[in-house]
Image (cartoon, rainbow, N blue to C red; front, side, top):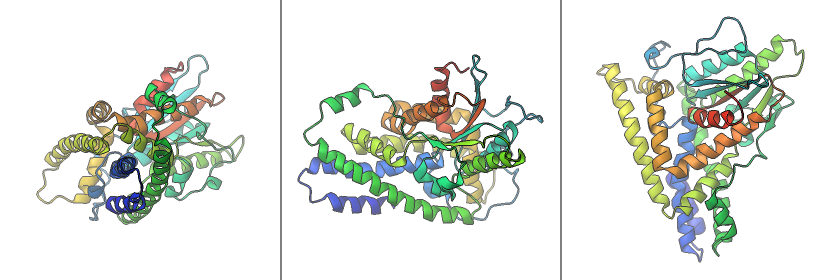
Length: 373
């Protein structure tokens, strides 16, 4: 799919008089497509995830790779957890509590964890890492959400100095570059959506569902409302993420601004491959089987990614240091946006946020800067 999008976009731009700017635009395409896919599946290599192999039915087979959240039997505002993917913050001045649930986007463990927490604590607000355009991936429309749902569409991350410089001193071809990036982002988004639809069919056949944790959060919130006989306001649902088209354009812009988009791609691929190889070798050693069921192996990879904090910290640290274009557009700026949309909910007693694992540290840091502990 990446080659198809790349070649099509190149044909559309091949007649341009500014070949340098055009070349930088379409050279970024495979980079941005990889960014988007990695973010959506939790940094697991796409080709290996969707191997169509029958899965064993024992749900505890890889229990040593992932610990489920342990909850108090009494629904209270205190969440206790042995899982470091869940962070609980509280504002001592107001008593407001925020629970951040870090998920692996293809993890059944994450789905069950989200359902358990939302059902137990009965939050006033549930924020999920989606925007309007990605809601259809989990089979919903905005009409399916609670009547008082909201989005983060008006929130912009703070500008850095290089952003200010680019605005104040634009190159003479800036208009053309913006035109290319706008068209690229829309075109790439449509192509990637088609690819996701194909992948989704395969995942469904294998019992896997991308974005299942977001659907679990929404359904659990609705169940809470029904159990209260719809007394009082419905649980507010917030689509807290930035538009995927905006994020795609932003990543492309930063890759082009670096002057070497393919160099960014090379650094990203190298970091991910090295770290994932280490994790893969450890899992293969633990399995100790001659005939490995690839579907089981991929499930183990996903669940290990969720439970192994050392792996996550090492991977994210390297990405931030070695591929800042990736972390800035896909993680840091979105961390700020999703934390800010939570900060706005000053009347809520408890907010539960369901986001990818990569966003939990940055969102926690942003919220702690606003008196949460």
